[in-house]
Length: 86
Image (cartoon, rainbow, N blue to C red; front, top):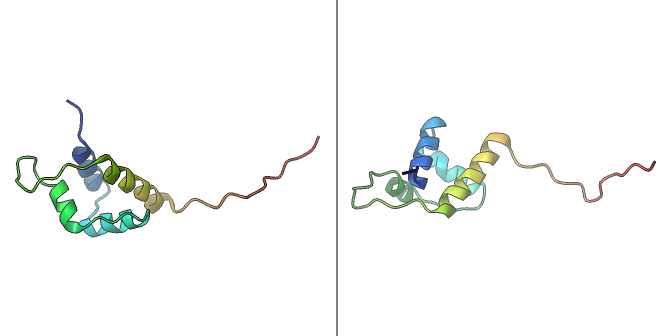
């Protein structure tokens, strides 16, 4: 069986050496609110009674925030691109 969202989230957390407070700040970059207690439930063992599955929305928002965290915000697009005439 493949990796679950929880597995992917855990691996990214370890690979980037992120703490819960870092993850909360990263999610805030995309206006997504997540609490430390929710993160604790996501990172628990599957057999634990307080375990929570990481949904697609949580992982998607974390990944979008991680891109901004690592690369910075996207530069604004110019409204009218300059077109050269031949």
